[in-house]
Amino acid sequence: MKSSNENTNFSYELHFGSYCRKHGLDLILSFDMPPGYEYANGTFDPETKTVYMNRQLLSGSPDYEKAFFLYHELRHASQYLRPGEFSEEIRRSSGYIIMYDGTCYVRKGGEYPEFRLDGTGEYLKDLYLGQPHEVDANVFACEQAKRICGDTEGLRKLFAFWMPEHRFSGETYKAVYDLLDRKAGGAE
Image (cartoon, rainbow, N blue to C red; front, top):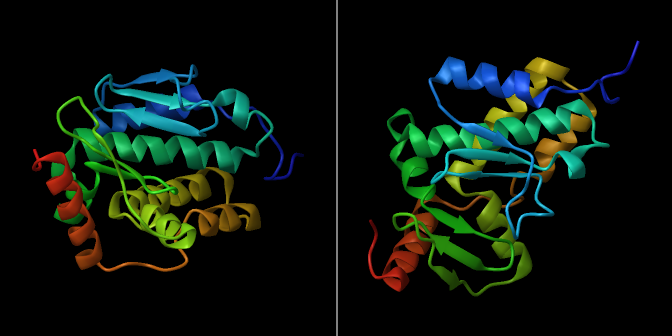
């Protein structure tokens, strides 16, 4: 019998299809990562309704990691395509992408103007990880991976890695998003 840390041929297609049926989503699953995302575990493109999973990068990973990253991206798909199911805080935050290095993108239609935030590495890392839509996606992904693979030490460590060490208040995010809106010339 294989332990929960070993690979058991996790079926992205099976879990993806089940999630889409359960949530009434018409999505595409692709294993061909878009340019610039070659080293990402996955991403979701709301314009094409495509969930991209980096099967090659995750090939040696345990099933709980594969499940975690798949369900993380599926949760982002729900956040974008079914915003009424989420809080105002999550709805607003999903329009902004803040990266570890301070690079930011503001969703304006199908465009993503790029901006920069100043700050130290830890501040920017926690700002990224603590965004309401990221926290929601990580909590959901952990719950789903736990349901599929069990509550393992590896999953708990993975979840802890993707959670911020310092949580910022909703007011901090409102101020950051307002600043990005001003830089972008106003929100949608």
